[in-house]
Length: 398
Ligand SMILES: *Cc1c(COP(=O)(O)O)cnc(C)c1O
Image (tube, rainbow, N blue to C red; front, side, top):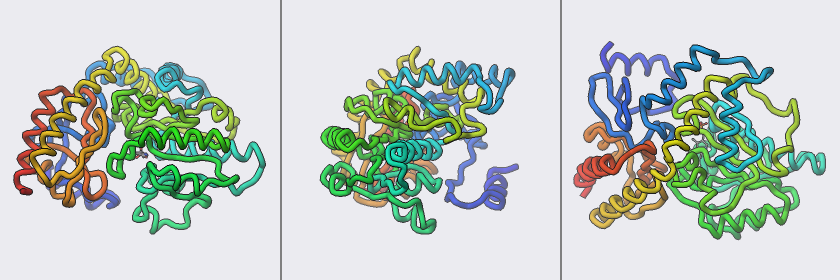
């Protein structure tokens, strides 16, 4: 089939909830993707912060292949071998006490919200608990996660959502304090807002929210689905702040492309739910946990986090040069390999030009921000390549 035939058939068959770029990818190697015509693309999106180890990593691929030959699924009615290693490794790097493996990020959020509800219910058996979430947040598309996603465009057609959710302003502690009452059972936020435009929490805000949660016995839920797994130069973004959550979520880069997420709990939150309270048919099956276990092993053996620090600093310097040169870029935020460039104009045409003309894959985060979330294994030379390609687009904007 020709490229256009694939696109036409896809449009005919696949439920249209996305406007896609007219590109059909065939395979990947390292930090590059190749379309069905063999054209090479430099990938600074990594399947939306998923392909931390890049494409076709031999060690990772071989681990998956050998697990396929052994066992793919058994259900959670039994124990399995890979989940033990994945769990042990994930708890070690996250410093949490318990983990539940899910199939996606949004399901990890569902589990986190259920812990919060359960924890509060265990105390007073009542059903009117509230959760505070943030404006401009993103936590996923299932109804619970959507209910705490502070974006009216995503929520509006699907109301009524779950009750008892209030929205505060990110990085504005006073706005959180005014919403707290004796029914509030949790505060949920991303440590770095991703889809909302790459806004890191300030240290003052995160510490303030932690203190508030301690004072009122509320759970702090940190969504690390996008900013976690080494992307900030720490294994999880909260570790840079020294503020530990009661519950946290991970997904995206955890499986390097295999669908797996997790919610993790520490301390009092780790025992809130009991057998029968939550379940999943696929979650934590041998295939996906073999992938996650191998990802975590590679992270340790190759010191991916340290690499992110080095190349992330280099990316920061190079982007700063662009900021100085092109007034259309009005802001630069982030850390490590999650960086956002704010523009004075909508960035959809910037991304489109970069992808279709320069063969550089970049995506937006909101209307005016270009988000750079490349594979964590990029080298400085790839940063240089990216700058050349991005500059070619920027020149057309002047
Ligand atoms: C992507 C994302 C989610 C949702 O994950 P899915 O796997 O798409 O369900 C939730 N929270 C954050 C911060 C994300 O970036």
